[in-house]
Amino acid sequence: MLKTLYIVRHGQTDLNKLGIVQGRGRDTDLNDEGRRQAGEFFDAYCKVPLDKIYISLLKRTQQSVQQFIDLGLPYEKLEGLDELAWGVLEGQPSTPANKAAFLKLIRQWLDGKLDSKFEGGESPNEVKARQLKALEIIMSRPEEKNVLVCMHGRAMRLLLCVLLGKPLTEMESFPHQNLVLYKVTWDGSKYEIVDFNNAKHLR
Image (cartoon, rainbow, N blue to C red; front, side, top):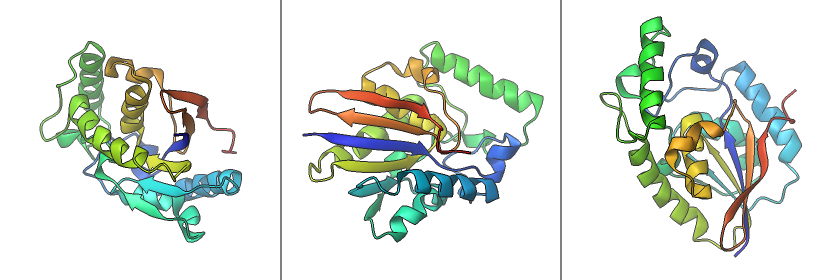
């Protein structure tokens, strides 16, 4: 079974612009810049013969690929593609204390403490568990050769680790920005990134 996954992060929101942590618990809209990014991505990839679109339950992912949906492409929402829940840190001002808490948690993850999380939040291991369920659905449909997946920054880092069989402690090796593309192929036995952190479509 051959399949190509076009995996993108959603476009910019106001919380992104302000540097405020925005996780699974913040169902925010794209801002003007995010809508412009979505248009640029559509212009660059609207000729790709996509068979299906998969998005998270959060509206910023659908807004990012709505122009593809408007072409009549089928789409499906999967909670496994939702962003990691940051719990009590979500939506809080970007203060030095909050930034320090965020960085401390990231360091714990990179040190292998992958069950660590904020109160009310999720750990990388918990996100991986629901991503595996989403991936099972996406990969169970051989008729869908070219698939567009729109998701979220931290979750995308984790999913790329899952796809490539890397430990989640290597999540920081996948840089990203809003509406950047990772193109991943599946040849029936392994996944391979054939386009890494591509932002050429963004002016």
